[in-house]
Image 1 (cartoon, rainbow, N blue to C red):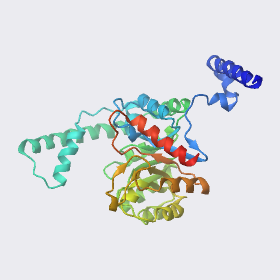
Image 2 (image 1 turned 60 degrees about the vertical axis):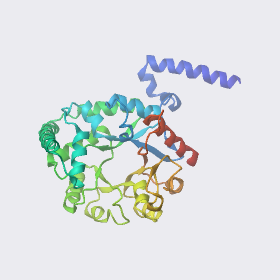
Image 3 (image 1 turned 180 degrees about the horizontal axis):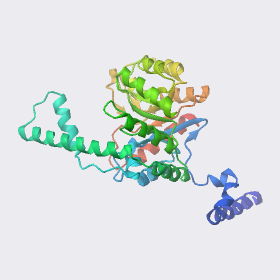
Image 4 (image 1 turned 90 degrees about the horizontal axis):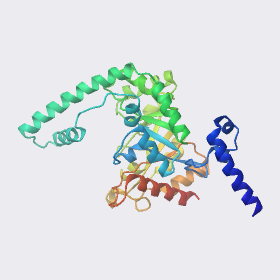
Length: 342
């Protein structure tokens, strides 16, 4: 009891010292340096989160996003471009992205658009193109100190950024924008950038070679088009190319060899999106964790037992229940992982 009382007193005094003397903190025991900071590394398995999970939250600023992450208890993330680039001063868009997406969706599905809808679509596309040019110009002249400042703010809160996902790596982006995205990722402390697989061999080769130049790995994400050999060409093109694998989508695509894929590619998997989806036979639903068919327990145990180094990234995609919010649901996902790994 005396030892416990002594520890509490010393800890309290230590925290007072932390507030008064940052230099003293540098040599403080780690238990004090990490006091009240998030920790989602469980028995050697880094559970992370893509900030896309918080898209339904009202404030999408970098500061608010950091609050969501720390409130969840997450200490490592894949950061979407929006919060970071807004923080760095990227020109804001006035385009109604939701409406644009709806109209483009109708067009892709072959549904007829009314005269007014066609006019609206043309105008929205014109606005989007104009904003894209503004963004490209901004990216070409960006001061990366803002990204370094963001990294510092997140690091001081106990959160590291292992991946960055801006919309800068598409086939329509210039080499200057691609280079910008990789430099921004480096300034944020990320080990890799992520993007949807472009389904274009020439583009994955270019990204891989640019990744080598900028010493930045490139993780290609897939949805239900993922197969066992989906990444083979990109991996052969460059050592900088890797996987941003999605375990849930792989299951929804009907594949039964997910464990073999993880074993085959574990050295090239940069990060893995984790969600609980159903097989095609069960409807392909995106469900609360523990209710779907993704073998999350087997996957996490494999990462733990084989000491794989890639993070398992929480991606909240199932509908947020009434009375809850994205932060609470990500917390549930993390606690589910703790239960499996504890």
